[in-house]
Image (cartoon, rainbow, N blue to C red; front, side, top):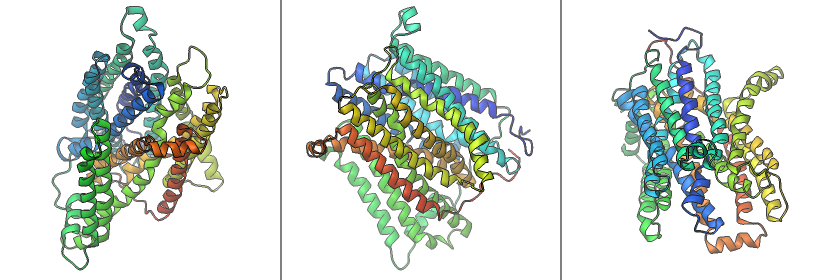
Length: 530
């Protein structure tokens, strides 16, 4: 029996939201202390600037991995196990990863294995929990989904807020480590593991109430089959096929260059693999678009039109990647900047990240209760895409503010950490407009047989965003580039901040141009059945 009543909020949502709140505490609890821990524990023998750089690179490799593995989780759920079973089993891998961090905090190999398992676990369930929540709605109550997704995102930030305040203090030896003589790092990484176990328990507790959408059966008119037909069908002109082949060759080339370019570390391999993925998706997608009509006749028009709709969605996702380049650096670049600012002795730079979820919890209800209703009364209705474009621009503005602060720091001025409130406020305002809105957009635009995979591509945008960070970091380390930046009179850090701000502004302009031609569709369920 379904727990969803027509026109009402599904009663099973609290189990999903509680699961998400605990899982996000566990993830952000370890994520927000990762750069400072790595710099102090594994790179303390290096000069501070080099130690920070190495820690920052590992952090962004980890985040790239977290948002890459949704591809695997979405595929397993959509084709084999369904969302519920995939979430459950991958959550156990997630718990094992946390256990490794706590057990091997003084042994890098074991610690990095733990990071890999967390990336696999967190990434594997990331596209599924939000889309699983979307499955609890049908056509009769879809109008309530926006509020549910906002509550879902609010719970993420509720967990993140307390994790951001608590974990940096535990890493410094406060609390259980001091009382019981435990290793501070073991405690700081162990408590998030306990919260992940609780998240799994909450999720399982609601199993008898959930709407379970079964995996899609093998489809002869699936996305990949239609794309393959379009690229291989005979006909005059093979521009699409040549573009796809060019993308494949570029992907293979980026991987083949690993040993020749002196890329031997894990970071370099991740960069090469991510670049290969970008080439395949970009050139393969463009090639399929050019020749897509050749699939008509072999596949029904509905399937071909569905593929074209998915390709349009992927263009929107691609233009969101610069936002994630900026957003994820608040846990690396901004933490290190906070370490250069004046602050109370009891305050850890990593704790400044608590400001982001705190502002999210304020802004989401403020937008829904005050700002958006007031705009509607004035005849202004911001669409999902309009909100997302504005959010990208606000992120760019936040990095202009951060760059101005860095210029003052580099000039030797005593800058209070209170000034970081401004970039955090601008970035968080952008996040609410991009991320919370994007979750609902991704679900509503995805064809029913591809919910998990499309949500995976939404997460993949974060991987690509972190790829841009790694590429920029590697580029500015080259002596010629570094010297050219120094000649401008700015520090490398300040230059990168203004560079990323410009990157976001250009992305916002392009997003606006593409969004103006995007045709929004409605892919919610049209019945209330399981």
